[in-house]
Length: 286
Ligand code: PHE
Ligand code: FE
Image (cartoon, rainbow, N blue to C red; front, side, top):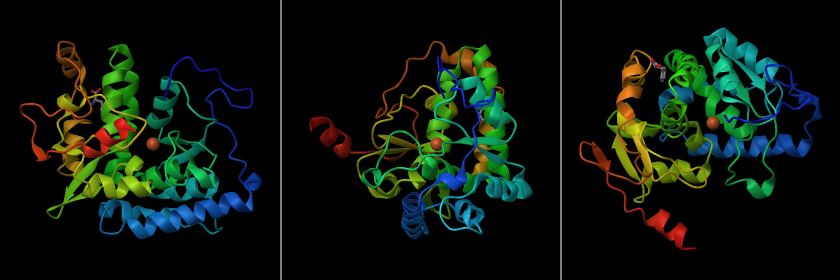
C-alpha cells in the first residue's frame, strides 16, 4: 500500500499485470522449491492448524512457482478468492478495492539467493506462501474481504494509518492461542525462516493480548523482526472485535490517544511475555 505512485504502462487500470509464468527461469523455480521445502518443514507444530490445512492449495500440478491462474481456480472453489499479479506497491484504494472483491494482489518476482533469509520488500514467496493458505480458511477469507471494505471506509475518516497497524499486527505478524500454546498465523512471520522461531521462542519481543484500540496506536517496524507481537484468542474472536465492530467511534476516540512505540508495554496490557528487547538493542548498536 502507498500513495503517490505512478501506474506503469504495462499495468491495467486496476494495476494488475500478467504473471508471465512462462518467463520464470529454472533458478527462480528452484528458489521457490527451496523456500517451500524449508518453511514447510519448519512450520508444523509452530503454525496454526488453519494454515497447515490451507497449505495444500499451493501444491500445484507443475513444480516450482505457482501459476496464478491455476492457484486462483483452486482458491476460488474453496473460498471465492483469486490471486492477481501487480508490479509492486499499489495505491491504498487499489489495494483495498481488490481485497473488498476477494482478489489478493501479489508481486511476481522472487528473491535472489543472497536474500534468502531476509528482504524488506515482499516477494512472491511471502505473498503466496505467507498469505494464500489462510485465504483458503473461510473465516479468515471473510476477514480479509472485510478489511478491504474497512480500508476504503477508513479513508473517509483519515484513519488509514491506524487501520494499517491492525493489518500489520494481525495479517502480517499475528500470533494465536491454540490448545494452550502460542502459534503463528501472520504471513510476515510464516514466510520467514528466522522470524518463525524468533516470534515464538525468543526472549526479546513482547507478546501481548490482542486489543484493537491498543494495537491501532502502536507503531511498527518494517526493517527488522517485530518488537511486540499481539496474540488473538481465536479467529472468531478476531472477527468479533474487527469485522463485526463499527470502527467510526473507535477512530474518533483514537484522535486523542498518543501513539505507542513498537516496544511499549502499558497499563491494561495483558502481557504474556515481557520481552527483554535484547535482540532489538543489539541490532541498534551494530
Ligand atoms: N468493521 C470495521 C469498520 O467498521 C472495518 C474492519 C473490518 C476492520 C475487518 C478490520 C477488519 O470500519
Ligand atoms: Fe504481506
